[in-house]
Length: 324
Image (tube, rainbow, N blue to C red; front, side, top):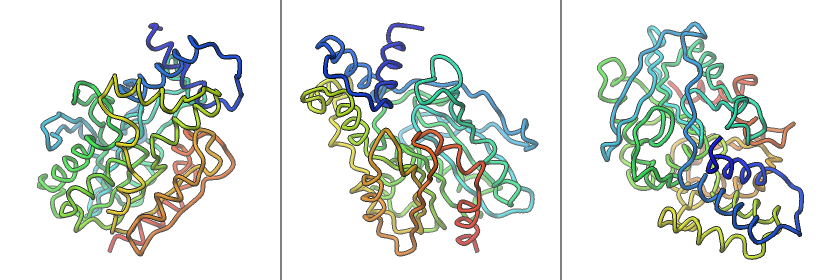
């Protein structure tokens, strides 16, 4: 493991710990802040370990461009005879398959694997075509913006690219479309809706799984680590790496742009951030048809990404309700 990766892992393990540490040295504080800033600035690419055919689904490797030209890669999983399509994206630092959290050096989120394939299988068997793609700087997609992760304010270009791609394929251009957007994917979708509402006029619904303001994670991490002025120090470190500060990322405000039916789901006892941030996102959504679902029985955020592969009823009911 490289020193940079080790620093990132140290930071993330600290983020997820609720232990107080009043005696942390200035050097350790600096290492913690820099490691967390590095992860949030550049993510950590993770490999695609599973494919749809391992779950009995035929699929096509696809590639298309974001609206600024960044090359994106993904899968198209067809459901024979269906005119219903769900476009799926992913959290940071995952990819279209999930996240290899059971392997080094990706064990910082609890030490277990996140696997989206069971969800795709459930949706496919229910009659949905699926497009699942990797964001820029993740999975097998290309690098954009110098490798910087902007938590939605550039990744929205990927969201719109996926919509335009779906509308350009002869076999999907006439399909009804819904969105399944996770974490930074949900944030990116809200930004896309804000900037280009015309792209979402014919979208039937959206499932936003764990949309979250980056500042919520940082504040929780700094509170847990008992670092004086930690939030301000993080902003300084992050700006040196990216040119952005945390207040540049505003999913709470951006969510107002969602006028389509929107389901929001979140681990209620998420140890990495208080749930009221997600309530604010949900309350600000403009859609009259919206629902908030709390995932309970765990305090681990990444277990929320496995939840609907084991408990699909809420997800299926939502999509089934909104496709004609």
